[in-house]
Structure formats: structure tokens, C-alpha cells
Amino acid sequence: MNQLELIQRMPKAELHVHIEGTFEPELMFAIAQRNQIEIPYKSVEEVKQAYNFHNLQSFLDIYYAGANVLIVEQDFYDLAMAYFKKCAADHVVHTEMFFDPQTHTDRGVAFATVINGLQRACDDAKAKFGISSHLIMCFLRHLSEEAAFETLQQALPYKDQIIGVGLDSSEVGHPPSKFERVFAQAREEGFLVVAHAGEEGPAEYVWEALDLLKVNRVDHGVRSEEDPKLMQRLIAEKMPLTVCPLSNLKLCVVNDMADHNIRRLLQQGVHVTVNSDDPSYFGGYMNDNFIAIAEALALDNDELKQLAINSFEASFISDEDKQTWVEKIKALN
Ligand code: HPA
Ligand code: ZN
Image 1 (cartoon, rainbow, N blue to C red):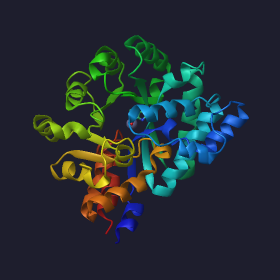
Image 2: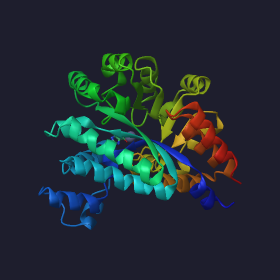
Image 3: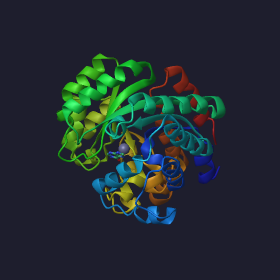
Image 4: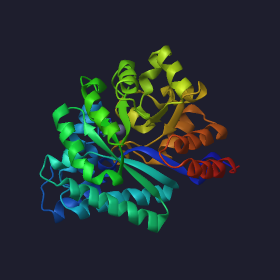
């Protein structure tokens, strides 16, 4: 089978996508208009021109501004449903999507509004497309520990709908250790835990995510390669890294896709997966990410299949479901 066909046909799980980062300019305009909110752009073209980021912070400034137009439950539903349509087109059959409650609650939008809109979209995606999903609530790490504790409190009534907590936003200067106590409480409450670490921040932050936050997965983690001892640990523990190739290129974590380390990580036995992060901002959804690395790094079909298999093995679905998807991927040839 040729590679494009294999990429298209493989069932895949997406484990690192921020729902606010799937906000396409067309939908942003439509929602801004119906909510009568001004956005600082005259056209979709002008929005896209603003997307020339050079690091994480320059992206985050625009990403948070875009999220400001989301006000009512239907907005969150429409946002997530648009993403699920992309999943269906890419044969992404399971997603574990991040949402940033503080981005919305700090503007006066109720936690319930956010979660109810997203949950309704998840239910409809299951019914319409057969796509399963879990929600992961992220704490904004540039905000305080106290604010994270408050957010955790707000989430407790929705515990059944939120499988885990994560940590995102500006990494450098906001190490995982800042949230050690919040994550301890989250784990006690039964949440699984993940954290962005080693995207722009150093390998030391990945150690902290493992040792202090006791994460089940590391988001990004590509800078782990700078520390051989950390690499040994990740390999020994089969610790998943949710890698986001187009994101890394767009935010200048790598200067050229040919320099991306995902293939080296895979070959050394690190449990890497492919993800889109903020696809509307970074130039592509799941299959675009697969195509970009397949071409730039000359991945072979077995490597592509291993990446898809890893996505299910690293996911929070049942062992039985993992087995089913893995067998389907292995059977493709
Ligand atoms: N890194 C950190 N925070 C984020 C990201 C990211 O890639 N996307 C959305 N919030
Ligand atoms: Zn991310």
C-alpha cells in the first residue's frame, strides 16, 4: 500500500489536541458575529496572516484572543463538532481532547457551559461518526497554584466526564513543581494526569512531571533527548510522549522538519505518538502531521504503523479496545 493510503486508512487516536486550538477562522468569524463580539481582523485572510508565530508565547497570545468569542454552550458544541468532522475525515477514531476552563471562566463563562457543550459534541460524535472521546482539563500554568486549586474544585461535580487533568500554556518559568500539590489532589480525586513538559522548557521539567506530578503521559517531551538518563527512564517505563510535529515546526522548537527527532526517539524505543496540538493554527490535522514526518524523515510503513499502534497503547481506553485497534492496524498491508 502506498504511504498516503496507509496514513489515511490507519485508525488513529489523537491524544494531544487543544479544542480551543481547532478554532478555524471561518467558524471564529461566524461565532463572533452571532455573539456580537468584535475581533481585530477584517477577514479570514487577515486572521491567517496573523498566524506567523516564532515561539510559544506569540502563539498563545493569539490563541487566547480567539477563544474570547466563545460564550454560550452552542459555541463550544460547534467548536468541538467541527473538530470531530476533521477526525472523521482523517480516520481518527478516538480522541482525548484538552480544554482550558480558566480561559473561559476568567471571562465569566460558567464551567458548566463549557463542559456541557463539549460533552454534547462528544456524545453526537460517537453517535454520528463512531468516534470515542475523553476530556482532559488543563490548568493554565502561567496562572497561580491557587487558581488551579479553584478550577479543580469547580471540576469535581463533573468528575465522571473528565478523565484527567493536564498542564499547558507558557512553559518556561512555570515548572511542573509549581503545581505539585494540585496534581496530588487531582490524583487523589481519581483523575489521570498528564502535563506539557520539554516543549520549550528543559529536560529538567520532564523529570519534574514524572517525579513530582507522577504523570501517566508527557505532552511534547521532545527535549528529553538532551538528557540520556531521562531517555533511559522514558524507555524503561514505556512512558508515552505525545509529539506534535507541525506544532514544533511552527513554534520553532525545530527549524526544519528534517531535523525533527520523532524518528530517532521511535528508533530508540521511546513510546512516541503523533498529534496535531492546535491544528487550525499550525497548518494541519492528524494526517497532515503524519504526512509531514513521513516525507521529511523518510519513515517506512512499519514505522507509520508503530506510531498509530502507540497512539492506542498510550491512550486511556480499555485494554480490550486497545487490542482491537492494534489488530486492525497490524492487519493493514
Ligand atoms: N503548549 C503549551 N500550551 C498550549 C499549547 C502548547 O503547545 N497549545 C495550547 N496551549
Ligand atoms: Zn499542547
